[in-house]
Image 1 (cartoon, one colour):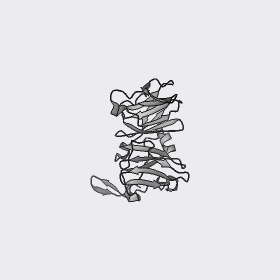
Image 2: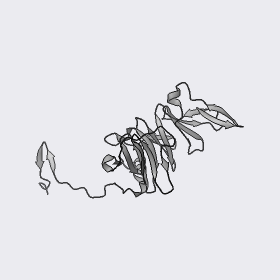
Image 3: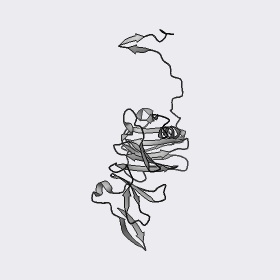
Image 4: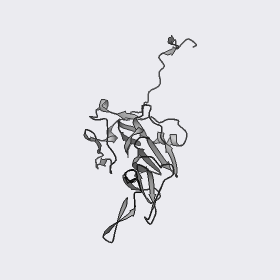
Length: 219
């Protein structure tokens, strides 16, 4: 549960509940409303102002939320098994998952200085542009492009760890450190080039029913 130090004594303010393993706090943060929030494997809870109780945020019950971070007016939630969600104006929206499901188990979320969000997962490190996420949330895009770093990109491990607080450490020079199954992974996210595809789409061939269809047949 949530403990408080009052007059030199530690007291239990908000019990975890009957399912202690599922409802124990994993991370505690100040929410955008100024109240204390904590995430657990049974959702995200908002503590009362007097710290006498906590209530689950709408839509999050049953989600195993292992990390949360507020960026502007949005709170991003990384879950163990259900991908990434965004809380904005008390509305919960799930981000589109990448086609291979790498975002399913997201341990930590980190904003960089180049307008990107980084997601440590069980299948490497992914990043996406904040403005593209904003366009998706506004209904202007149907998908979000996620770039992925894995051992083929130079990482010596693809499976990151989480369920801890903090889930990453940052230094003043921009270097960050994430835990993985093979030890700590250090890098500077601001120094990694943007992998967003910028080139034009080139149509080289079209197959119809297994047969090559010349692209200039109707030109």
